Image (cartoon, rainbow, N blue to C red; front, side, top):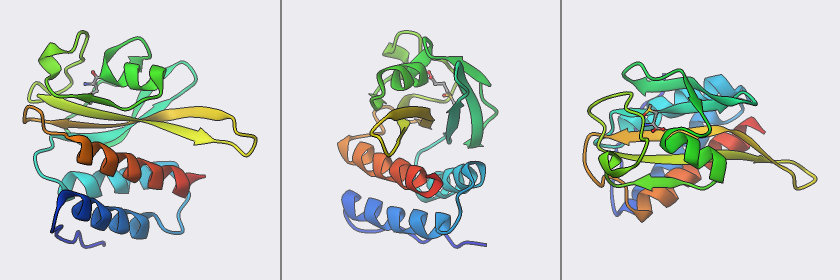
Length: 165
Ligand code: SME
């Protein structure tokens, strides 16, 4: 069992500590499901004000729910749907301050008020890029995620990608 160490200091400092814990947790393990499960649990319990943290994997056609923490979620999301679909399609992080104002936001949990979705892009040796899925975080608080959160959670997603490479 892994302890989750309390984070302290400024937000960037807290994310540096979280990244260190994430690297330790995933170290030596390449299995995508195992790493996604443990990383979701770590982030869900380490950060405040989250009601859903987890992975959607791209199956070549659409996004399919993977390991997560939170209430049961929508299983399949087309790339043309929701915040997750936009992140996957545009391959850029989506930071949504108010999900009610986002056209076509998909409510899996009615408590969600803001959302951050980081695309998971694997880079091959030849420089090719492949969409593996998205890392999705929901908060019951409006405007929960700022630029520091985005940077910090993109770094966490990168740790998962590096561990699974
Ligand atoms: N809200 C997401 C769907 C996934 S759940 O929140 C877990 C979306 O609009 O893509």
